[in-house]
Length: 302
Image (cartoon, rainbow, N blue to C red; front, side, top):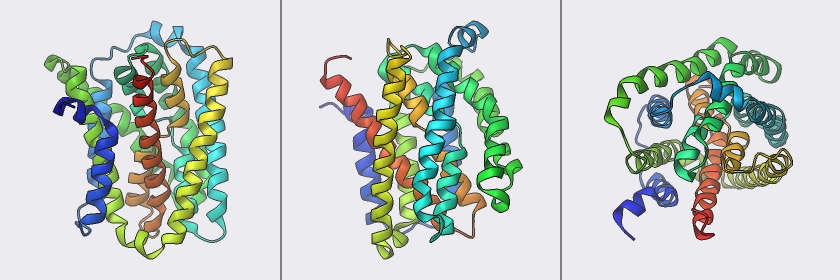
């Protein structure tokens, strides 16, 4: 296997990130800030080369609305059910699950067509509809679910930043004409960076509360299995599986977990364990996606 192939394989990045996170002592870095920067870079590269055209949004509006409903009704509902286990016993854990639940879809949905060679306008429509809607839906959900533990305006500020900044930076970046082989390794690196920093920061907690973390991992795995089965069923029944299957699956199944982790670390400073549900979910989602990608290749469909 060539070096280029290794760099394109997300699973290798994840294994390396986990190994380093547990081998190295906590580095004492500003994890929240670095995570935000990593997410920004990931978003910028995902947006790079994409031209936002009104007709693409209009032509894919049905699928985008279905993806929106799967994200903010199905995904949010299942995520909250997962968090109920901790609600009475661990406020921080519950707030971490709630933060995931109120997030829009992952911006990395835009990178799925790049990786899986699917229809790009579909992912653009999903993300645009999701984030425009999130300007209203996410603050409202945070009030209903989280209450006054987190300011809705603070959440809104983060979401706006993740829309405006990547779009502005992507404009001059177009001149570089970055290829897929240039962008995918950097996207993988940013995901690995988020996993490494988050796990390394919580290394002591994971070792000291192994039973709780084990239960958390089990719940995160059940969540992604439940979402995969239900989202797959809806996508197939809606006829969205022709050249866009993985795009809609990721758009519905992935929340912006990285942003949820960053916000837990930046805002919920009194509950350091609040970031753990997002960290474990992000890890499970990345592993799930890496096997989806490589499983498709093994099937000979790419």
